[in-house]
Image (cartoon, rainbow, N blue to C red; front, side):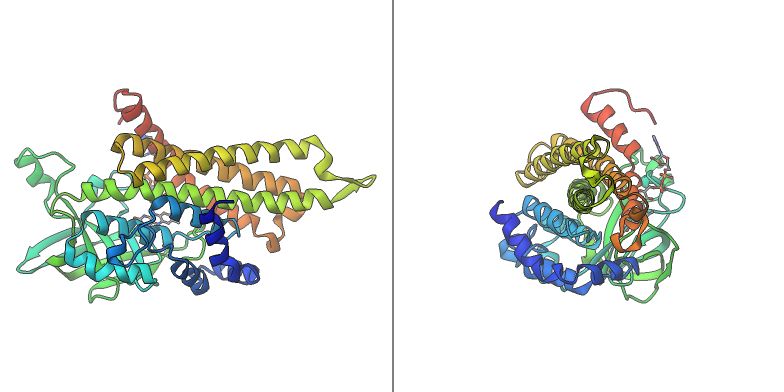
Length: 387
Ligand SMILES: Cc1cc2nc3c(=O)[nH]c(=O)nc-3n(C[C@H](O)[C@H](O)[C@H](O)COP(=O)(O)OP(=O)(O)OC[C@H]3O[C@@H](n4cnc5c(N)ncnc54)[C@H](O)[C@@H]3O)c2cc1C
């Protein structure tokens, strides 16, 4: 076991005895504070934050190891991923003032971030978003609605993607559609910010909201990156997000294998033969174990490439591949575990059915498997864009 794995296991050791209670909490869509505190105390929320701003500077690789270990307890949660991807955005694209103000808070666990990009009419086509941010003196005024914002109730800040130039203006000025979008760090309790819970499944330990923005005043100092150039922030943050979702899938698949193998060793229904002695049960489990290792290696490759500031296309390929294969692994692992346990796979005490929903979500969000295939076809294979 690596030193990092050891450190992560030590940090999460207090959670092990309380695992069942924490899992029940996560099914109630409640963020578990002990989980969050363990991540902060282990230094993992600050892993992607430079030392000069209160982090450990260990990078995405260290964080991916920690999130895998946490998920291996069956405790998946998107908020550490959303918060640290935003920390990366601030560390790589923020002003010195933003870095000084927010990064130490995040490292300490005192700054939680949600991410508000998706809109009803836009979906994967972010260029179609309608939320606007209009300049007014030393601030911007935000108006609009985001359709799924996970953890908007527990977050201290929302990273909001908004239009600072209309599509008509872009056309008039002959500017590319990638221009005219900006990212804002909005106080989650600022006047004019509203939230209404959405009834969706699949998100562990977090509620999901429609968030609304009615004349929300955001200081110009809270613009992240250059005005009209949110794409450069997005490019920095989506690859780490995809890498970390894949790390979480590896961890959750470990939980599924642990549950399945423990059961298959004990359970016998014919002549005292454990079910795990049948090849029909063994082979799918062995298959998952090999896929798991392949995805883990891809996660590590993606994280190392990101930490080394390697070629952006190569980093994006690894991150996308890890996320795509991680989502496939997740589905296979949980389905195999359920099949191994038979009817008991549906027993609430194992939590496999909620994990089935959570792992299925990874095929559709934060980016769908189809959009990843589009990316690889176009950018890695050089094939014509299909859409
Ligand atoms: C539980 C949950 C939590 C979420 N949390 C957040 C959050 O915190 N913040 C946030 O901003 N968003 C969040 N989302 C939104 C999520 O990121 C989007 O649902 C996801 O990006 C997909 O967008 P869409 O649902 O609008 O799908 P659409 O873009 O409408 O796509 C529908 C389907 O068509 C396919 N498709 C679309 N275009 C193409 C194409 N060109 N080629 C091939 N296939 C295509 C897609 O792959 C998909 O399968 C959350 C969603 C859920 C369900």
